[in-house]
Image (cartoon, rainbow, N blue to C red; front, side, top):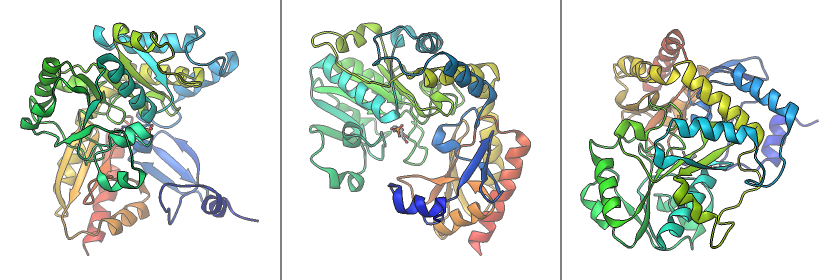
Length: 397
Ligand code: PLP
């Protein structure tokens, strides 16, 4: 009889070769458990998903309650469904008036697709601007906006009329003109290795978009829902986008995404032609119930406020290790840059041996990410720092 691991390797299509897959049988809080009884600490949150930890009891309860009422009823937008309504109500309460209309989808990529379509529809323009080393998802539109040639080339032709700017280069903002439909940007670049915008960069971008009538889209799919120390990343920089894209941590572990704009702007997907964007499962009631509970947990348990001190706790200790060159951080999201002589693959193996789950970045080969659930305690942080220290020691020998 084949083991699950053998079936995984024979019959599951995966985007990369996984040499030593772990079989997880259970997850709780910051912990993952494998089929051999080993306990791991999750320091990536399923790539910025489990901000409230795995199986948070309030999220589980909300899912169970919703399962007593209904699952999918009808394609998105035809019936009033209370989980969608309650979630949109609480979400928009946290947002400025210009972001008062939520279009629910199933994933981050879909949120990006919807946002790009909305921007084209609003402006009637074709040109779109993205950023080098940006990642926005795997669908054709999102892939077209990917700021990396190597990962894109095999799939050409992609969407035309896209330009890429260097993040943090204010002079290049002049390339945004009255021909530009939209600028799509992660307010903090994630897969580039946690690149923080310089002071006033996003304000200058906002001003340029205002001047040229260009729609400004923020991709907060990885940085939203408390990761940065604010509920939304744009709140760190005092700049409001025209369209906000969310997903990942939104569902508290269930799949859901959204693009959010003003009711006025969103109307252009409803009329002339109608059905400007359609989804069957977008805003699935079970996912919405989980997302509502997850958002309530973030707000009630003061997890967002703690992200800053918890993140700094990692920096204070890890920066002292001589294998660490620098650390880029916002809230509880860290990019740990190691010195060039470290073999990062060896380091990753060593970290795994200490039963920590971390991850590398798509576009920075000399760094790894630490972004645990926001529920991690100070003593758990200290324990993981010790383990990372041991792994760093070993990788230097
Ligand atoms: N945007 C960013 C910044 C992301 O990190 C990701 C996924 O990693 C996406 C978009 C795409 O989201 P999804 O994988 O849910 O389609």
